Length: 282
Image (cartoon, rainbow, N blue to C red; front, side):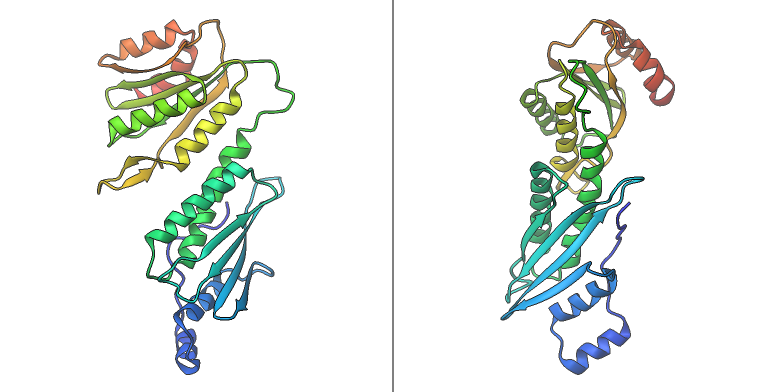
């Protein structure tokens, strides 16, 4: 799915000799390395404007049995690079403005974190990573146009951990209020579940919640640095059955598994518990 990039591309010995012989700048060396990586026809272009350069890269996200999703990246690299980050312009006729805004914001933050060092490859990897991730969410969760029945949808999420628990919970509360989603944030031993319920056909709001949860800093890493959620899993997403509905979004902490079972039973979701949780996570 797209490119899988682990580390920066490096110049080989032949390229190093070439740069010494012809006095290539660090940016020129970086461009040479990028050309060897983005080597498909039309994938990578460089234009010069005085002492600045414009780098055009065409990235894509491949989808099984569908046309790939394309995104155009335009990097305007100033003369003072890398002491000043490039201007980053991205566009795509296939992505929503919201998704493009998320990708652009994260790429700019990535560039700021790498100020003073070669960063173009890092920026492109960041964009590719977010493209792969957000397109999966955006397209796999699209609501069919004919689905106008007002069905209620449930979405059950699994979290691995919360380091900054208070901040994390506050953020989840904020999003559920903004998106008018009901449900529960559930703690039972080491198990952390988020049960979202979109009332009256608000499946699109669940989609929006998932995009936010995967793309916004919600927790801190082991070094105390703000970070995104990389270990959230969507356990299930399906139309609600039964007649009982959540009226709000509340945090619940249980010491006993039986109390968790009762909650699912009280809201006509015993089948969800037995099918997805009972024998897998408890």
